[in-house]
Structure formats: C-alpha cells, structure tokens
Length: 481
Figure: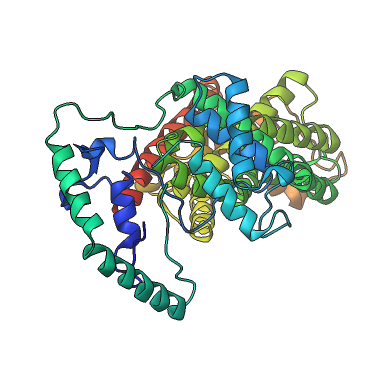
C-alpha cells in the first residue's frame, strides 16, 4: 500500500485518524473496515499502528532495553520469557540483534546509526502486533514526483484490471456475509496502572543511571553552592558589630532563594526528553502522561534528599549555625522543600509550555517574586501594602523563612563589641537577643512554628496534583495540534 500526496496534503493526518491518534471525533468523515467489519472510532487504536517520522527514544538505554520496556508496557500479562522471545524475534527481523546491547545515543553523545534508530522505532511498533503499513519516498521532490508517477501508472492499470473488479465484488460480498472473520485487534494484555508506573520508574532510572556525569552533578550541585557560601561567610560570629545578625539573615535568604534554582535546572535538563517520548507513547495507548510524570518525580526524590542532605551537613556545621542536632534536622527538612518545589514547579509549567527556555524564565520570575513578597527578609511583611501581605500567604518562602529564622535565632544571645564599645554604635546593637529579632521581623512566628512547617510541606502534594492537571491539559493540547 502507498499513500501519496504533497506536503501538507494530509497523509500523516489520515494515518493519525486511522490509528486512533486523533480524538476530535467531530472532524472524522468516512468508514474503516477490517475483514469486512466496520470499526468504531474508539477501536482504531486497538487495531492499527504506524511508525512516525521522528525517532523519539531514550538515549542512555540499549536497543534491547528500550524494546523490552515497550513490550512490558504493552504485553505485561505475558511471561518474561515470552517477552524476551518477542523482543529477540523483532530485533532479528529488523537486523538489530548484533547491536542489541549498544546504547541508542543522542545529539550529546554518539550511539547507534541513524538507520538503526529508525529500525528501533519500527520495532517498537511491531512489538504491538499491528496490520503493516508502507510509506512513500519523500526525501526529495524529484523522488516524490517519480514515485507518484510510478504509483499512478500502477494504480491506473490496476483499476482497469479484472483483478480490481473481482476484488470489489469480494469486498461487497464479504460485507454482506453473516459469519465474518474476527477483527485482529492488538494485544490487550496491558498491565495495571500501578504496574505501568513501576515499569516507567525502572526505565527512567536505568536511562538516567547511565549518565554518570549527570548523576555526579545532580548530587554535588548544592554542595558547590554551599562551598561558595562557606568561603564567603567563613564562620558565623556572635558579635553584632562583626556581622552576627546580617550574616545569619543573608545565609537564611540564600537557603530559601537558591535551592529552587538547582531543582529547576534539573527538571529543564532531564525531563523534556521524557516528555517527548511520552507524547509519542501515550498516543499509542501504552500509558498516560501523568504516569511518566509520577515516575520521574519518584525517580528524582532520592537524589534531591541526598543532595540537600550533603549541602545541609556541610554548610550547617562549617559556618557554625546553632549547635543543636534537632535544629540541624529542622534546617535540613526546611531547605529540602524549596529544592523539590523548584523541580515540581518546573514540571507544572513543562506540562503546558513547550519551550524549556520559557519555563526556565517563568520559574525564575516566580521564585524572585516569592522571595520579595513572602520571605520578609527583603522587606518586613508588616510594612507591605495589604495586597502583598495577602499574596505572601501563597508563597512557600514565607513559611520557610519564618521556620529557619526561629530555628536559628531562638535562644541566641549577641555581644556588641565588648566593654570598650563606642557610644555611637548603639544602632548596630538593637537586637542583643535573637528572640528580639524574631519578634520584630516575623511577629508571632514562634507561635506559628508548627503551622508554618506543615504549610510548607503542604506545597509538595499541591504541586504534584497541579502537575498532573497540567499534563492532563497537555493531553488536550496535543490532541488539538
């Protein structure tokens, strides 16, 4: 079979419609028959597949691993031995067996050849047992015209042949038969939602685990930030004239404002390739986009915890913050949240915004706005106009700043230059006790300590839900394109 037409004439749209990739039912006209039986629109995806023009594959997986995960998502109810035989057979059919253990590669690092990438994409569709489709050579205008002329000659001769007339008679006779052959639907032995999530988590983890440099950077990026802070601050003092108050305020400001950026950078660098793969695979009905989103979230959480734990341990004890183990635990628990929020907020925007650079800018602006309005470290919340006061309750920076300030300043006593202090430095010694700074800068923060902590962690499930909604919206956007 061949489908011919100029660029933009609707070849891909026709294939999308027949394979169930387009879900706007009001735009469909015509009928589709399989073995003499008319198919309903909702049955198209269960019967047909085709290989798309662009290869969208995870670069750090080998060919065998990539095809095995596709088979697991489509054929979970079969045994592992059956899936292995199926993958081996498809690789042998497409001459991929000799490179089965080679990583696929990407634009960043070299892997298999372009032709082998194309055959991997074909193999991923053949694993689902679809009816085979052929395409026309449109690599150049000359080839397209040549192919069109050749096919036109063939089809014209065919339509004038006795075979064509008899074929039409068979089709009409088959449609009137009472006992029609069964429709060869794809395998429907797909796994449960939980099983799919587990498979996607395994695949995501294995793909990223091959990027050794990426793992090292992900675990060390917060530590590198901590090194800069430690070099700049050296050791916190207790004398107000030596920056005891200002240094602590600056440290809290950095611990609230900087971690979201590292989380954002991780998501912008790592998630778009997964998003591209999910756009293709979800159209084939292998899973829904929110499932790969949750798989990615489950994947990055351990890295976030370890990275922030390394940073917190280093910066807390190196610069000499409040020497209490329980307060260190609180510091770690609070700093962890902005880092995770930065990554989750980026995922929310990546659901509805295609360009990662736009997402990058958007998250940065939201973080800056949150620090200005909510932290209380740039300007006291009590001194802000009422609209900004209200908005501050919607920022995670408000709750994290208050908890960190109480955690660090409560119980501290400051000196002010010793007994020989000059009389003109009284303004610098306005807060001889840490509790005075808390009550002035964050009124009632001590009584809200537990509430602030709970409100801070409430942002995490809220953003996960928002990200799922965002990718549900993405489904609608993709369908309408």
